[in-house]
Length: 364
Figure 1 (tube, rainbow, N blue to C red):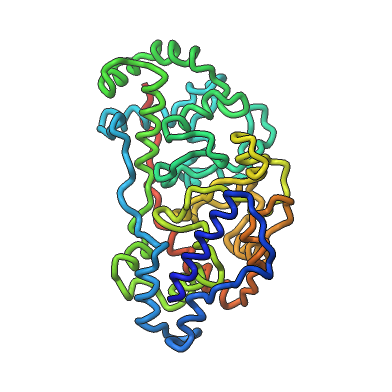
Figure 2 (tube, rainbow, N blue to C red; figure 1 turned 90 degrees about the vertical axis):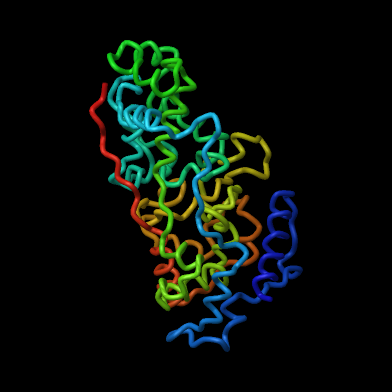
């Protein structure tokens, strides 16, 4: 019964948050968590019960990760993937021929760059953390603020951005055509040679290969009762219960593809820059959690260095941005014990997996 109460409260929260409504804290009744509902069914610090495992395996907000969606007009053929791999690693896609997609999305650094924020072409620090490419094809929008409606649209954004690769597409196309071998690769992949759309499609198709799935978490949801340790089960129980992570990190890829202001005190306008809706000030898209052990530092500004820091941040209720989302204001701080934080961390680490490592090919 507890999981249905949590689900109903979550839906009410989303509707209120999207509508910009406010409600007094006294008017909100906090639902019992799954931890509380199963208190008699388990010894918290020893062995967890089969009943609790079954409840978690059938939780309505948890879904094992399926196949990545592929657009009908951009099939992942060997020719397209080979071209996309070359373009991803080719620094000639930048204005000064020094940086490629891989410069900020390095396979050896969790397809990020390991920095708090990306480095601009002039050497100064950029405004946001470089989001990982891992599982990016599962999102309904891309970038922290969701300004790209597809992975194809996202692929061209950094190329043209004057702070990132600083390359005008009208100049890039003839440059690539002049490189011996590229025209042939484009024709094999798409039939009509070097075009803006084909550049975007090839890079996006390559990025759709960068997937982490079938983690031990997925195996558990598919029915393996013993694949997670008791400590990890307790962590998952906290994830969907007392810690309330599932409020935003739910469904496939553990992202609801929605936007929230989690309290980070920053001048970053977030989603507001796209919609101009005051309710979106400082809101960012919920990042997925697969590959999370490879993608530090965390948050859109890279301000949290470790997963322990992330847990502590939410435990205290975040910082105090004036537009902080309703849920964080009403239900936090969480009051997690040190043991509970350790259990939650243990579960989060099950989502790390092993990202596919793709090497730089011999370029045309």
